[in-house]
Amino acid sequence: MSETKAASDGLQAAIERSGYYPGLVYDAVSSAVGPESVVSYVVIHDAHFDPAMEVRRHVTVMALTPTRLVYSHTDEYPAGESETDSRPQAETSTEAVRHSRISSVALTRVVPDPAAYQPGVTMPTEVVLTIGWNVLSHIEIEPAHCGDENCDADHGYAGTITADDLTVRVSEAAEGPDAVQQVVAFAQALAEATSRP
Image (cartoon, rainbow, N blue to C red; front, side, top):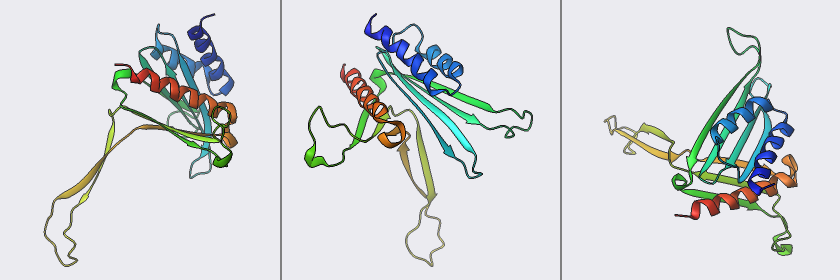
């Protein structure tokens, strides 16, 4: 079995292991991947509490093909949030980005006891992967002022534009050491793929 075929099979198995609407998630990812093979992948399934103290689950899947990064995110909406339907709903979005469009791949590693670090042996206990492709940005605008508390003149507006990069965090305590290792391997494969002209 080829490495890319094994990666494709592994991606499907990882999505199924997550237990989070695997048919829906895999269908969305495989539709975006299309006929290309999967070189590397990451599946991150987690849950959080919203202000109403309801559990909301979501899954993020990143699949690296020979030409693109496929990013998929699925959110769950509990029953009762829709006025017309009392069943839970899920929303899935996918995006495929050519390697040449990716402007940055940043990996932050947290390593306990760095004095005892051994290259190739010691693994980080937490990683944060940030991928930028400068397509989406958010703008924060506020009224400009001169600093004089008594001034009521119109000074226009001031603002900042911030790239809306993709960031995922995985920790050994929450997802396990294999998940951390997989994100590190994925980041290395993505950095290598995007380094080619």
